[in-house]
Image (cartoon, rainbow, N blue to C red; front, side):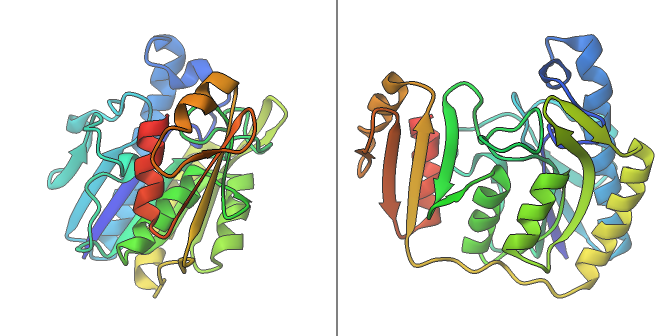
Length: 265
């Protein structure tokens, strides 16, 4: 059994402030780099307990150089840095994998479930929508996995995103780490979260969870922070400037959505 783990940091237990996500703010960042790593390790333990023989971890936060290779158990592959491939946070995933875990994920841009909410970028985008629905990184990456025939089976995240997960698919198992209220967070004790992730990871691989369904066409809507970003993005092939700060792109392939984001942002 092959398992793919994509790991972010803004949805790990205890996190609250942008300084805690940035390597340049070392004293704030290091404890949450450690928590990100520990949550991934818990997912690995659960996967192996369920019989996973191959595991790939995609470090998917910021520089993609957060998880230290020597912290992972032997036999696990770690993907670090950004190659420029359009799949970005899902780089290396292909049809040979049996399941995907998304660890440390967070609420989308324009949402209210996490002080660190965003979709792909904080600086350029206010809101991202797919087919009229506000799109999180969870949604983008789950649709990408589904296009390869691979199901997302476990998501650990803030409470608001966990609700979005269940609205998309009741089958996907969730672990709630923290609840955002304005710029405050109500967090679970981190060790409780680690135990929950390990148990749910094992359970998720023991159940039959199918990839989410895909629409025949996808309408991507990007609302930018200012007109200059939108104007530039509107020159992407097939894109259209529909307001001063909004660009749309229609396609029948979810890969095209990821490729467009890679070039527009």
